[in-house]
Image (cartoon, rainbow over all chains, first blue to last red; front, side, top):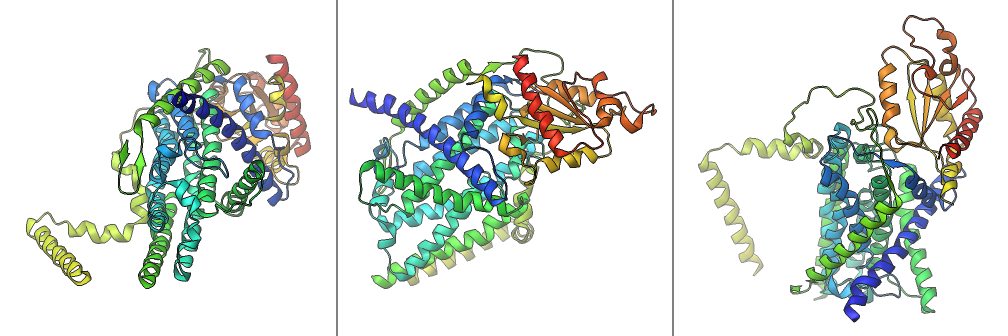
Length: 317
Length: 108
Length: 139
C-alpha cells in the first residue's frame, strides 16, 4: 500500500504542483525581462492564459510527418520534465523518489525533453524543423561535457552521487581555499550552461523565431505546442532547483513553509541571474559559435576547476 | 536495483512512474484539446507559403556542420593524420602506449 | 474563464504581400517598449501554425497570391485576419497596377481593416484588440 501511494499519488500531486509553480515562475521571468527593457510587460498569469488559449485552437497534424514520433514526442518531453521534479529535493521536502535515483540519473533525465524535441523536429517533415533539430543536437553535444565535469566534481568531494547527501554536506565546507575557487568556477560554468540547456537567448538557435520560422516547433499547433510549452517551463524550474540543491542548500531554521518559501526565493534569484539577465542583454549566437563557446572556454574553465579541487585535495592530504 | 560504488538507480520505479504519468498526460491532452477537421491545404508543411517541390537529398553528415566548423583547428590536424596506412596507426599506438606507461610508472 | 482566454493571449503572425514596408515598420514599432503590445499578451510568432491573428500588409501581388492563400489555410482555427494599411483595404497607391491581384479581401476573408498609410501603432493595437470581439463571435 505504501509503495502504491509512493508510486502513483505522490508523483501526480507533485507533478501538478510543479506545473503550476513553473508557469508562475515563467510569468515572473517574462515580467522582469520586460522591466529590464523599460516596458511594462504581461501580467504574472500570462502563461496560464497562453495555455488556456491553446486549448481553444485546433491541432493540425501535417501530412508528411512520421505520425507516431510526431504525436508522442510532446508527451515524452512533458513527462520527462515532470519526472525531474520527483528526484530533486525542494528545500525542506525530500524528493519523493530521491532514494531511487541519484545525480547521474537526474543529468540524464535533463536530456530527455531535449531529445524528444529533436525527435519531434526531425519527424515533422519540414526543412525548417530539420534545421532546428540539428542545431539542438549540436548544442546538446557541446554543453554535456561541462555538466558531466560538474557532476564528477560535486560527487568527488562528497563521495556519493545522492543529491540528498550532497545537499546535507554543504559542498563549500568540504574544500580548502584553492578548492573554494574551483567550486566558484564550477558555479560560473553551470550558470552559463543554464541558458543553453533551456534553449534561451543567446543560445536559442534551435528555436530561432524570425530566422527559421520557429525552428523545431514550426509545424506544431494546438495541443502538441501546449505540451512543449509546458515542458519548457518545467525544465527551467527543475534546472534552477538543481543548482540551488547542489550549491546553495543553506537552511534558515524556521518553519517548514518558511523554508519552502526561502527555497523558492533562491530558485527565483538563480533563474533571474542565469536566464533573464542574459536573455535581455545578449543577441542570438550562431550555432558554430555556440559549439566553439562550450568546447573551448567553458570546457577549459571546468577542467581548471577540477584541477584546482585536485590540487586542494592533494595539498590537504 | 542497480548500484555502483557511489551511485544507485531503480529502473523499475522509474519506468512505472514514467508510464503512469504519460498515460495521465495522454488522457488529459486528448480531453482538453481539440483536433483539426481536414480542409484544403491545411496539412501541407509550412514552407513560407511555397508549394512542395522535388525532394532534395543531403548527406546525414551535414547535420553537425556547426560542430565541425567550431572545432576546425582540431579537424585540420586530425584528418590528414588518418592516412589509411596501417604502419602509421601502429606507430601512433606504440607512442601513446609508451607515454601512458611512463606516466603511470612515474605516478606510482 | 476559458472563453475569455483569447482576450489576453493573442499570437500574431505577420505576412507582407508585396507592400512598401511602411506598415511593417509600424507593426514592429507597436511591439517596441514605447507602445508595448506585450502587456496585452500580444506576441509575435514565427510560424502561422502558432498564430491566432494574421496581420497582412500590402496589396497582393501576382506572385504572393497563392502563397497568401496557403498561409491562410495553414493557420489553425479559430483565426482572424487583419488587413493593415490602405493597400490592404483597397490597393491604395497601387490601384489598377498590372501586377496587383486585388485588395486582400479578394483572396482571403478579412475581419478587421486598419486604414492609414501607414497607420499609427496605436491604431494597429486597437485593431488587434477588436479582433478579440470577432473571435468571441466565431466560437
